[in-house]
Length: 250
Image (cartoon, rainbow, N blue to C red; front, side):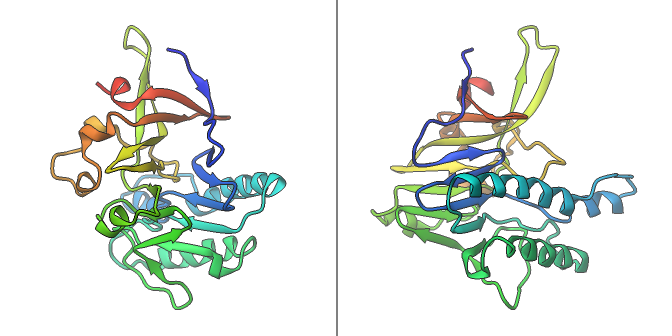
């Protein structure tokens, strides 16, 4: 398989696990699931990992890299910002801590929060949006279908997350197998879709073969459509093009 480095589009670029639109100055971050580490600790597993601090460290590197080359105008969190479905005091504390971190780089009106299915919270100074429109771009979590996005002829690209896309890469004799986060890029209902991997690093994600029939995200983009999407695998130092997703996940 011939592997190509990075995405060559001038419209957007992949920076580690994030998506950046240089012209618009928009940084997009997929599912953070803040509080996932606490859930594991509650189950009695000794996890020597501070998810909040590691998330901030990773993003600080990415933001500094962007600001060295471009103007950063907006940050969009694509939903599932926290993990528990119910209210958890520690998660809300971590969420506010994280937003204060982002406010070092942008005023809060330029930090957009998209509502995910895990985001059962309200904040006094932030509004959760079902979707956000900017020029010819639309940003939504990806669980719920909003028909108006498809009817809007001005929208060319829809950016989602939610399904935590990943790909299992194996050697020719199927002994060594490793799963990697990936971006998926393709067409659905005449719109270009860019699907982001989850940002939190505790779990890599899911292959489409692991998606169970009837799960909510299939209402937006069916499993058979995802097979035709282009795959961009997140490596340690770069993002690599691996071809059609269906050919990698038979």
